[in-house]
Every structure is written in C-alpha cells, then in structure tokens.
Amino acid sequence: MFNSKKKTEETAAEEVKKAPETAPAKEETAKADKSEANSNPAEKKEPADIPALQKALESAKSEAEKLKADLDQLNDVKLRLAAEYDNFRKRSQREKDAIYSDATASAVTALLPIIDNVERALAAENASADDMRKGVEMINTQAAQAFEKLGVSSFGAVGEAFDPNIHHCVGTVDAEGVESGAIALVLQKGYKLGDKVIRPAMVQVAN
Image 1 (cartoon, rainbow, N blue to C red):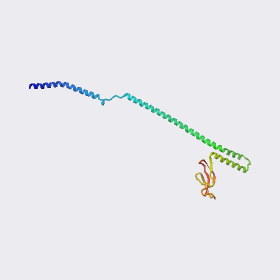
Image 2: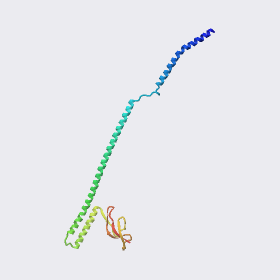
Image 3: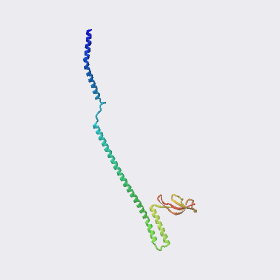
C-alpha cells in the first residue's frame, strides 16, 4: 500500500516536470502557425510589376503615335482631295465657258456670209424688183446651208399631224384637202437642234 502511494506521487511529480516543457512547445507551435499564415501568398499582397507597367505604357504611347500619324495622313489626303476638286471645278467652268464661246463663234461664222449679202443688197442702188428677189432667195439659201452646218433643221409643213409638243396652234380653219387635226397653214416655221426644239412652229389646224 505504501508502495502504491509512492508511485502515484512520483507520477504526479513527473507530470509537473513535463508541464513547463509542454507549454513553451505549444507557444512555439502557435508562433510557427502564425508565421506560416503571414507568409501565405493568398493573403499577402504582391508588389506592383513596374517593368510590365512601363512596357504597357510604352506600347500605348507607340500606338497613340501611330494613330496620330494615320490621322495626319488622312488630313493630308483630305486637303489634297479638296484642292484637286477645287481645281477640277475651276477647270470644268473654264472648259464650259470655252465651249460656249467656241459654239457662239461657230454660229456667228456660219451666219457672217448671210450678213454680208444682206449688206450688199441694201447697198445696191436702183436694183430692180427681180434682182432684189434673186438676192433674197440667195440669202435664204445661204441661211439654210448655215443652219445645216450647225445641225439646225426646220419643221412644220402643211399636212403634217399637229403635235402640241413641237407645234403652237393659234387657231383652226376650214381647209380643203387637209385632214381634220392636221396643219392647214404654217405662219412661222419651227426649228430644232438635234432633238431639242429651239422654237415651235406657229400653225393653224384644220377643223
């Protein structure tokens, strides 16, 4: 019995001795766990990648410079096109004016012989009626030839069907041998240049 009590006391003493040694061990373990927790990459903020940011900035700057160069090139193209269009407009206007001037000169040139003969007829003194008639007939022939050179043709003749697009009716008359609705009398010939009517014919239409 004495021996049993002694063993119990010895066991308790051993546990007391072990207790101080166990506490520091637990404390060290806690510190180690805390240190591991602080070193966890998931919880630790990584420092900024300065070289990568610099590279991205340089790339953005290069792209901006390229876009600026493209914009400057487009502006140059726009200015050139505007200048070319302005030159084209002015050149077209000059050509248009030149065409009108050339056409007028061509018409006047074709009509000059007629004017010359009219002046000669007026300058003739003591001309007979027969000579005057021949002179007028010659002038009329020259006028027809001049119009032919210019591409101008006359229209409007008795018996033609009336067309309000090219004929101007100033009245109706009874006319033998002329169908109803046809031209019975031409008061003034019409003229056209190609398909363009210069002057409609002034006519009277048969009833």
